Image (cartoon, rainbow, N blue to C red):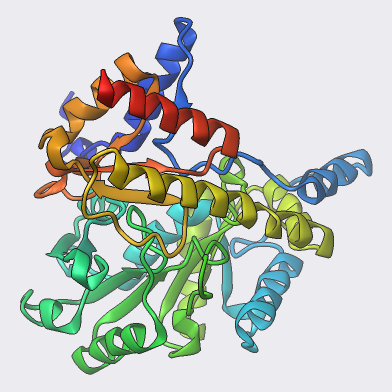
Length: 383
């Protein structure tokens, strides 16, 4: 049997770390999980109740439209009215099996094999890994802390011929955001160069000092990817969405029908519950918990010798340089897990060229567990 080059896609290291952490826990160890962005509260009660009620009423949970339930598409469109003041046609919303499926559909629906799509490094590793598997060329543009680890038109202009641009605000792993001026400059750069713009907005709602700006506030030509995993704390439900120009809806729906028929019906019903007033009220309260975690982590890291810490404008990550702790992030995180009982993700996951000297700590767990994780981190470093 021959394994294709597509099948040799690089690993998603954060998930490998999580698997190793669970093996440690299974063997009797206690691990504080600061490696993955999995919101600890879980799905809001209104989401779980919506599904429970549907099951009790005998909902068949069969196939839905490839683009999702019409009522869920309408609910998502209304979210943009409440959050961004936008009037959005629900027909432009495509519900997906998680935001990850949204990226796969976007890459397939927008680009030919071999075309070049740019993004800043450090970046969410699955962007480039998906592109590799789909035969696209990911063009990673090194970004500096002074640029908030975000792409700039100047750096992009030096990257050669491009066909697409992917931006994320708030970004993973850094938590940094693009304000209206800087996002607008990237929108203009894409428009002037004929580039397709994809905006990852999965962490919208999880911001600390200012709300995130949606690309849809600046252009109708962007493809926006979002979902219920982060703000609504519904990671395992695998339910996301895209907002796309009208002419793209039918091609994406056709791709979705062929790839996975439709998003999970049960998860769509739960998502409707999450969008209810009760669901929205519950998840809004999560932000205060993440803010407490953020303050604790951002205070502790420089005191413990970490350097060049990203601002963490949003999301629930702290991205930091190892400083005096070395330049082998994979070895550092392995020791921290097995000797210190804390799981963290090596920066190599997000920046293969420079990530040996960086690490990402997630503060999506409960405040109590984050406090314990920081105590263990300090003991480990002193030991």
